[in-house]
Length: 278
Image 1 (cartoon, helix red, strand yellow):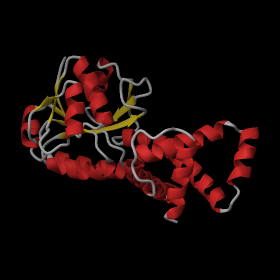
Image 2 (cartoon, rainbow, N blue to C red; image 1 turned 135 degrees about the vertical axis):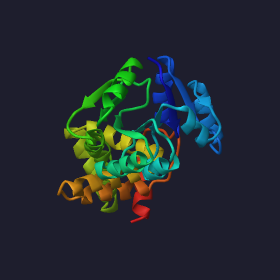
Image 3 (cartoon, one colour; image 1 turned 90 degrees about the horizontal axis):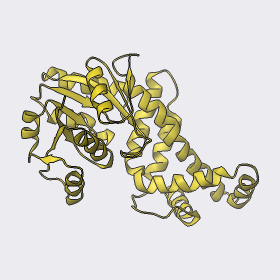
Image 4 (cartoon, rainbow, N blue to C red; image 1 turned 120 degrees about the horizontal axis):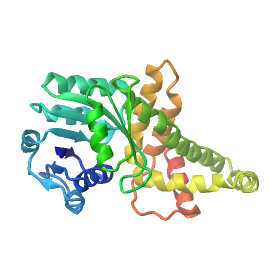
């Protein structure tokens, strides 16, 4: 059964998810008012219908997907006041912040489903989506119908957000750790000996450093906030959140740069930026 779905903020991930839902026969709408030409182009390429403003989107949709940078999740929930369908928060936020989002949309008459997305945007085979809470089964079936690997979690209403936080804590946290280690070695003049030892004993770590630099330039501006959400999740669990606070600081020191080459020159440039802010 097809649904009328609204997607708020169709960035790379949002557009990829939305495009898969379009291909499976759903009408997917978005509000292009005030958005950049790049976002409009991306939305058009995947077949989204521009309804103009957010009020029209809220009125016409049965389901709204919020897929935005984590710092915007609460404001987006407030912006859809009056929506009485199914609101899905699929942002990289802590379970406690997901609970706040649920309170906002439910008090306005909508029902809430918790979501979490890992991997690259569709059509990448690495994409995997999690849903939890009341009504999550419907969303799980909808996404499976769009051929997006999806899991229904029954460990609690905000289990999807918790799973996303745990996965990103390792996946993105370790890249920040690599950048911090390389920067510290560079500051002490021992980067070359360190790289030499790694080349002999763990050569895959050299590739990790290059990938970390590329990701920091491309996505660090967004991962900074995500690290703060992960740190809060650790603290809420009675664990120290300092590591991921530091990871966020590492990412915040790298300005966004698209289409950077993945090589040692890129890594060296990123390390200089990290140290310059120290």
